[in-house]
Image (cartoon, rainbow, N blue to C red; front, side, top):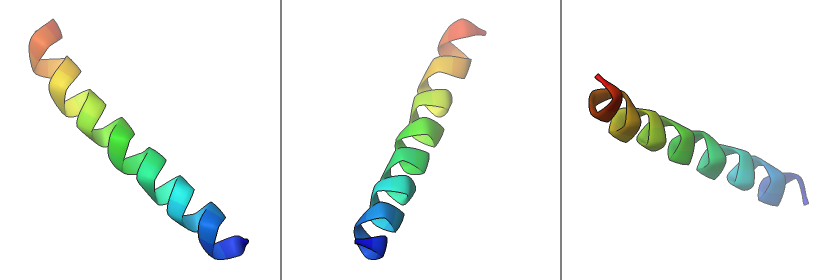
Length: 28
């Protein structure tokens, strides 16, 4: 259970970083 939660949190963090990487140049 803890490993699943850690994996989900890591995946969410990666998606957030990728989203920012795509959105920031687009907004600028």
